[in-house]
Image (cartoon, rainbow, N blue to C red; front, top):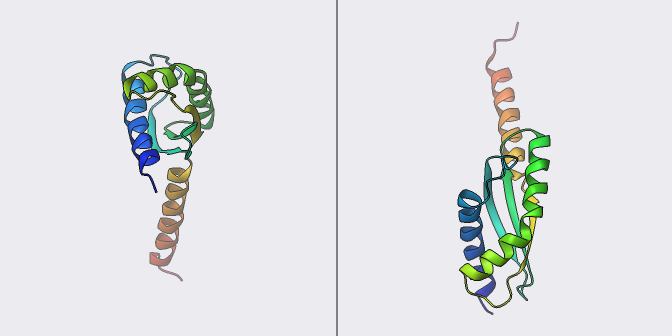
Length: 119
């Protein structure tokens, strides 16, 4: 069993973050955090999971801009990590942080209700 897909995924995560930070100057790209990268075994596709701060519209707009930049990012990543065939980049919104935040809000509300005196 090869660890190459995991190594490639980690390198893609690092380089994608660097490209977003330094190369992509589009104002429609909000505050983006890369939460993970999954690469297929044959290294043909890489799903880049992102979390975007902001409203639902801002998230969708950021995702659209990143999908349009995917070709540039693919060639740049291939050049930076020196692989012959860079995987096709697919951006996906990671909603797990939102889900976790919602769970925390519900737990805090339950805790407040339990701590308020009942008549």
